Amino acid sequence: MKLSGVELRRVRMPLVAPFRTSFGTQNQRELLLLRAVTSEGEGWGECGAMVDPLYSSEYVDGVEHVLRTFLVPALLAADDLTAHKVAPLLAKFKGHRMAKAALEMAVLDAELRAHGISFGTALGSTKDSVPCGVSVGIMETIPHLLDVVGGYLDDGYVRIKLKIEPGWDVEPVRAVRERFGDDILLQVDANTAYTLSDVPQLQRLDPFELLLIEQPLEEEDVLGHAELAKHIRTPICLDESVVSARSAADAIRLGACRIVNIKPSRVGGYLEARRVHDVCAAHGVPVWCGGMIETGLGRAANVALASLPGFTLPGDTSASDRFYTSDITEPFVLEGGRLPVPSGPGLGVTPIPERLAEVTTEQSWLAS
Image (cartoon, rainbow, N blue to C red; front, side, top):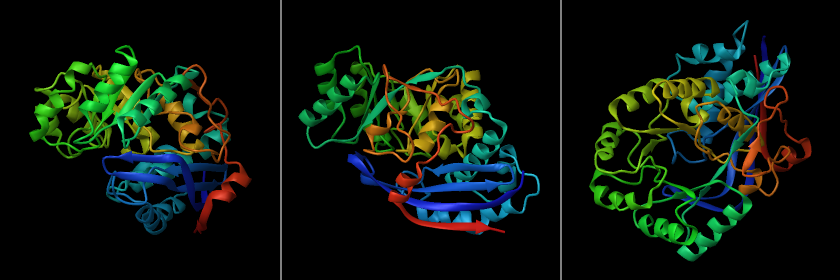
């Protein structure tokens, strides 16, 4: 198919409550959406980058610039475009995985819609619904944390993830275990907040039988994670460190992780995310799908990815109302602790025009 043009759309969506991690607090989510128009139809993409380069080096303004200047023009020049050709066509431009992922997602959505194939089917889905966990931010007080966790358990979420940082780690975990018992699936996420000098503190988490500790050290410190793994019983899960199937294979070989969080935006797209899944499955390493506070577009694709067989742990594929009072698509609603995998062509969802217009702050059109 031939790419005719790409619409870039900035949206701003208020969160139902502030979401605090070790690298900052978000009160709203500002996102870049893409609409790819092709000779076979159109498709939607969503970029996981934040406004500031806090989670990764990419940020929304930078993503928009590289899309405008390099990535979109490269695809517009291609005569016969498919989703599998996106990565090779963009390979000469170093990095910018989140920008590339959003563009590939839009092309893949257009291609699959044209052929009447769902994301789940194209990726290799084996389930019609997926179990859902929820990510709980750093709170001001432990009583507030317990109230929030209790609410999510009442909603039916089957796994709780607590964001942690130095000074907010052992005590909140202890409080959650004491209040809700040892049977709940519980894990923690450090977002690179610790160093190897914190080994004694991280060892204090071992008695709580956590599913995992996610990305305790800096993203480039893969050897440090391998060393840390020798000193703690809690399984290490890598997030920011895994940016490709190759980096996942290297981390596993080095003993730096026993579990991998796959975020398609972080690894350059859903096709590479499937390769990461395949590498981990070949090594017997379980994976789960992470989240970037997506709209219904990104959530639909993530749920489809999470339905692959290697995703044996509940992901951060929470319902729409976890973050948004009103989504830009029909909302994803938790039922029995699970979300349904969309079965319609492509993503299986599309933005509601009125809702999309309400949250749009800027839009522009790129064409050859």
